[in-house]
Amino acid sequence: MIKNVGTIDRVVRIVVGLAMLAYALKLGMPETGWNWVGWIGVVPLLTAIVGVCPLYSILGVSSCSTAHK
Image (cartoon, rainbow, N blue to C red; front, side, top):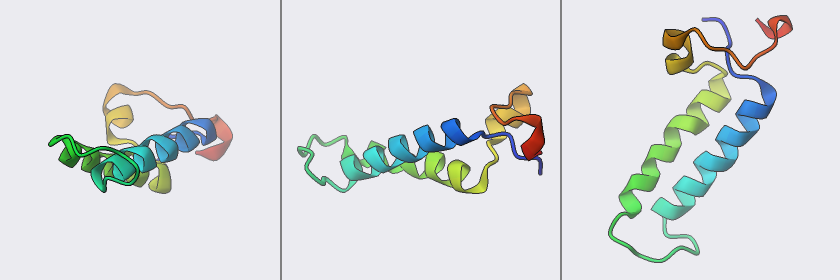
């Protein structure tokens, strides 16, 4: 698989993923009944770690420079 997630995109995905997981685990966040939605934060974390986003592949998008492919 060709990497299609660039460095800045990876950092943003990690920050968003960790924030969503903190919401799911109620770490400093209020109990709302919707905290389970925060588990979706696993997806951006995994795509940041692997460097490949399946949706980017389908759409033909890449935030990665050609040197990283």
